[in-house]
Length: 289
Length: 258
Picture 1 (tube, each protein chain N blue to C red):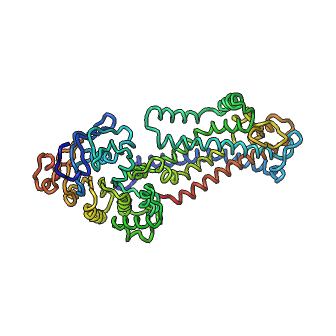
Picture 2 (cartoon, helix red, strand yellow; picture 1 turned 180 degrees about the vertical axis):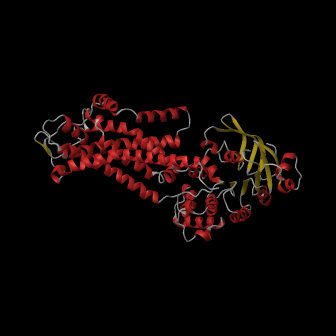
Picture 3 (cartoon, rainbow over the protein chains, first blue to last red; picture 1 turned 60 degrees about the vertical axis):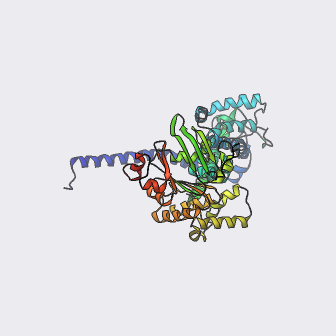
């Protein structure tokens, strides 16, 4: 009565096959990450040192450190965040909590999603036209950061909106019924319970911004600068562009150098991601409903 | 003005109320009065417009896309369209939902929220309000030692009593309960019913329920809503002893449908 029929057997075989195939695809997915990281560590690891991180490049960028690029990336990311986070969070709050559900709101939401899909080189050209030329910021940290900010805005908006929407509607209804205004409800209930998600999104943005090359190469990042930036109106070197330059544009660069730069860049990005994940895990444990 | 005999102003007075969501009607042709300090039951099957009726009383239509209403609705003798401060109207009206809503705040802060929104910020004053409201909602003894615990992590029955305590903290003149027992165990339901019996001396209670026996136990008068229409309003005892105008009311109350 409980003997396996031919159909059972063939179903079980199919199930085993599917399982193996899915596992295989997952391995294929992980493999490049593992290979990239190992190659970077093996070939770039030896050049990493205190001097590498904290001195300037010498001998036409074929030796020395990466300090100007490292600091430049920090500048670019910081200024970009200062511009994109307040605007993005405010827009997300409006779209999630205030905007009526009509065709205009839907059109705006669609536009934001599409904006996230615009290639970064297009953002770069927009940045040149708008910030470098029209607003006359010149090629500067300001112009480059604003270009990065425009590029990351849609992602900030979408991730913030999702965090806000994760707060149950019933909480808002309860507050409104008590005579709270929309803003009182947002301030006392919605924001305190979505701030973790919003911050997680912002941190992930940092890692994405740090790695971008195209948007900054025409707007503010320099090939080589012998000094550190003093204000947002200076040009600066940046890690991503520096990597591109010493890999392709400069002759006689020792092999290990680009790997070292790439390793530092990826370490920055992974660190931010790890902070973000740790943060999210920590806050999830304090789940409030 | 013609002199009239002095009569009590009804807490809620509704004339020719029609509610629509977009083009879809939810309720039409409702006229009824809810007297001060009575428990007014509203019974009827799902989708008969009971919840929509409650949402008009405190003008939640302003938070609901597409919801609109026609007709005159007076609360506390004043047309709800003429309340210049809708937030004051809503503070006058406490609301309890079908599913308990413990806000993700401490038990204390849940109950102190409405007073705080209204500008009370002295700790001593808030302490008194919180204790009084929790006691009246029959929850104090269970939570007095963990006022700092999250309200949203209490059990369902406790959260529902917390919701009632929160509604009471508004010092409401009118308390709306929308199928409060749907997600609550029978023991808690009975405790809340006892609470309501005590509250009827101080405020008007509108009890929407799909348990007709609950309406019979509690309500002084009861309205029967069916498919967007108010079929009948009458003294609860009359309705349940068969003195009804409409055969549909009798059928529903006797459990022949719904």
